[in-house]
Image (cartoon, rainbow, N blue to C red; front, top):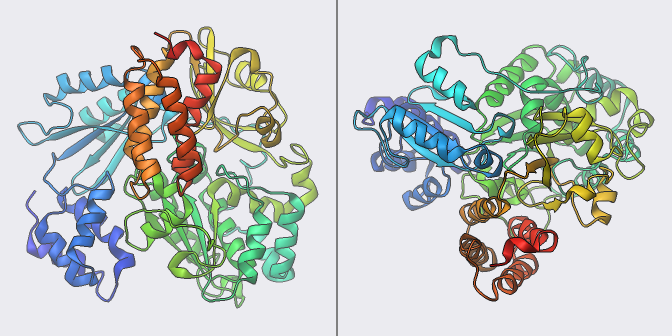
Length: 562
């Protein structure tokens, strides 16, 4: 579709007076309308937002979901990350090539379809997963291959499926707030000071559920005490770790729980503005959240003078555009500010110099969803679940060779064996390995699955809970293929800001490509690369990009032999 002047002017008219922070929303609006963002559009966006054209081209090139050349009317993206690869993503691509008469990486002759490979879509429980985009409509479907074929043939009767096992109902509570509920927020507005709220969160022992496991109350306290206004709450919903899809469930099914948690965080730290940054590959959760926010504002539960109080809280829901690095909190700030998602050097830390250089608290979706329940039911109620160091329940994303891949709510302390054999319906085939924590995780062997699932126990065992991803592989899988997939993932997702990660992920991927026919010294090379990235990279991507490979060399040394 040619970008028409009148259509573009109508889009840009909505952004008159805005500046660089509006760049990602503008780019999304233009691409949704026309399928791509050409030089003429870039020039006009530059005039509107007062951003140099070169910077805009840099942003378009950085994010994989943006296109600067015409595409087909529909873009079909097939996930090739580990779980989807195991479930024959390459065969799926071949089937689409045959069905759509188009080669992967190209557009069909009739201009109807563009077929692409993509990294993790957060749909590991639907593997192999597919994302379909349409001009003038945006992302209209995500699901498995059968869903995609059905949708392409009969879009009018498609119904999205959401796999979820919500037992026990603790975080995933049947009494989650509606738009006119928000009882926890009402409670604190009537009877608790910000310091009271922070003390309750600290007493509950809530630690971050995004992977770093930092104490939430401590983070809020640091931000509240920091000098400078305004302060901001940022929800990190850029769930891009392969094998992780728990936050997708929360956003789709419990949006008001998340929005209420953000508002409580705002009250606690003294912020009246929040940003919810959600990955671009999550169209369904984005739509649900936008609708829920509108409902909450209409009901007086969010917005100006909430429930008649002097506290106001507004949330800006921002959509990413395909960059794993934006899961790193400072890279996420850069994205919201309309830049490429390059991580910042720390210190200074977000609690003093975060979004727009102001004190900012950043929390994961699952972390924030715990907050209303803690306020409503008390810290002692929360501590009744789990262990002293892993309080509350934990959501885990289980994919791969189990009977029921899904999101499960567990009480920390149960064993991995119990989860796989009882909760997940048992294994498919004979277990070969479990990758804990996602692409940046570590392997667990069959004789180690009696490990207790707690942050502290897994840490002591040399493993990680990470983001809650659990990928299960049986003996039909060649783990060397899994390692190749992981190597490609990190090479593709490295932002390139620092050389240890940029060059390290490239060399790691090159060596893993020849793992079926290694040359002498490859394990030494992989070790040197891994240690260098771990010690010298400026952010968590590079620091953990070799974890799975290093773990495999320890647990499965035969994979690296000729």
